[in-house]
Image 1 (cartoon, rainbow, N blue to C red):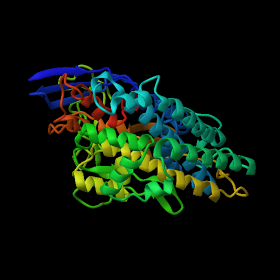
Image 2: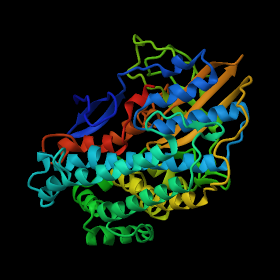
Image 3: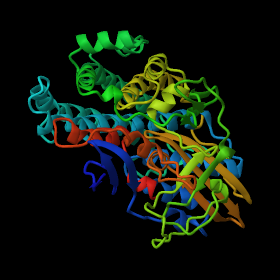
Image 4: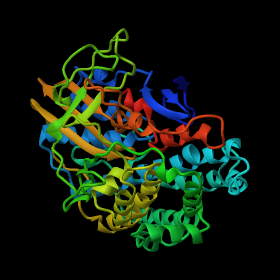
Amino acid sequence: MTRTIVGPFNRVEGDLEVRLESHDGVVREARVTTPLYRGFEQILVGRAPADALVIAPRICGICSVSQSMAAVAALRAVSGTVAAPNGVLAANIAHAAENIADHLTHFAVFFMPDFARPDYAGAAWHPAAVERFAAETGAASAEILPVRARLLHVMGLIAGKWPHSLAFQPGGTTRALDLGARMRLAGTWRDFRTAFERIVLGVAVEDFLFIKTADGLAAYAEAGRADLPHFLRIAAATGCDRLGRGPGPLMSFGAYHGEDGALFAGGVTEPSEGWRPLDPDRIAEDLSHAWMQEGPALHPARGETRPDVDRPDGYSFAKAPRLDGRPVEVGAVARQAVDGQPLIRALLERDGATTVTTRILARMVETARLILAVEGWVRALDLRAAFCAPETVRFGDGTGEGLVEAARGALGHWVVVRGDRIQRYQIVAPTTWNFSPRDADGRPGPLEQALVGTPVGDQPGRSVAVQHVVRSFDPCMVCTAH
C-alpha cells in the first residue's frame, strides 16, 4: 500500500488536500481535507438579520449571487415578505449569468488545461489540446474569458456591481429596469448566445438540446469542431466516461424559482431509479471526522459550529452533510438528472453512475437551457411594475430556510432569529456535500468514493487521472469552510 498526499491543488478557489492510499497502481482509499477555516457562521451570530445580506455574499467571490439568493430566501421566510415578480425575474437572470460564468471558467480555465499537460505527449490528440487549452497560452481561454466578461455586464445592469451586491433583498431587487436597460440586457444576452454557440457548442442551442441519446452525442462529438465536441473526443480517448464514478444518489434543491414553480425541479434521483421528492428535514451534518467539537449529527437549523483542531478523528474543517444518512452528489449533473433532462438521464442509465464526462457535459447542457430561459425572463419583465415590494421588511422571532442551487450544487442557509438578532446561522455549501469527510458509520463523502479505483502512477494519463476526478466536481473550498 502506497500513501500519497496530492495538494495543495492549483486552479481551485481555496485550499484543498487529498490523501490517497493506492495498491497496484489504483486508489483504494481517499481522504479529502479542507484545511482552511473561515468562521462566517459565527460572524453572523448576534447581528441584525439584514446584516446577512451584506456578510453572506462575501463568503465567496465567484458565487456571491448564489450566497445572496440563499440569504434572501432564508430571511424572506422569517419575515413573510412576498417578493415583487419583477424582482424574482431579475434575480433569476443575474443568478443564471453568474452560474454560467462559473461553468465557462471551470471548463476553459480550471478543467481543460490538464489535457494539455506533457503527461499526454504522444497521444494523437495532444498537440491540438495544447494549442487550444494550455494554461495561459491556449486559444480557448483567450476567447471564452471575454465572453464571460459579458455575463458580468448582465449582473452590473441588474445589481449595480459584482460580486457582493446589495441589490438582492427579500422584497425583490433594488434597481428598477427601464426600457433601455432591458434592451441592453437583451442585446448582451444575444451576443453571449452567439459566442457560446460558435466557440463551445458549434451548433445552435436548440440543435444541441435536441440530442437525447448516447449515439446522438457520439455523432455530435465526431462531427463537431468546437470546444465541447473536442472535449468529448478527448474524454473518449482517455476513459473519462469511466472515471470518477459517483456514489449514487443525486440531489437538487430546485433552481430558479418563479410564479410557475422552479425552472429545474428539486428532488433526489439515482441512475438506477426514478425521481423522488426531497425532504430537507432529512438533512443532518455529521461531525465525527471534522475538526469540530464532538456532538450528534443534527439538522442545520439546530446545528452548531465549534472548531476543535485537536479532534483525534478529525481531518477536515468540512462537516459531513448527509440525506437520510447517505452521502449525495450535487451539481449541474444532479440538477439535470433530477429534472429529467433526456441526454443526461440516458448517459446515467448507460453508465450506472456519474462520471467525469457527465459532470462536464451537464454544465454545458445546463448553460444551453439557461440561455433559452433567460431570453424568456427578459421578455417577461413588466417595466410598468415594481421590482421590489414597497413594504418595510420586519423580522420577528422565527426560523428561515433558504435552499437554492449555486453553480456547484445545492446551497442551503438556515437562520434562527430571536429578539431581532440572529441566534443561529448555518450554511451547507455544494462543495461541503461533495468534498465531505467520512461520517460516524465510516461512509466516505462523494469525492472520496469517486476517487476509489482511479489509476495512479507515472504512466501517461495515470498521473493526471486524480486531477480529472477532483476537478470534475469544480471544488470551491472557501465556501466549504465558510
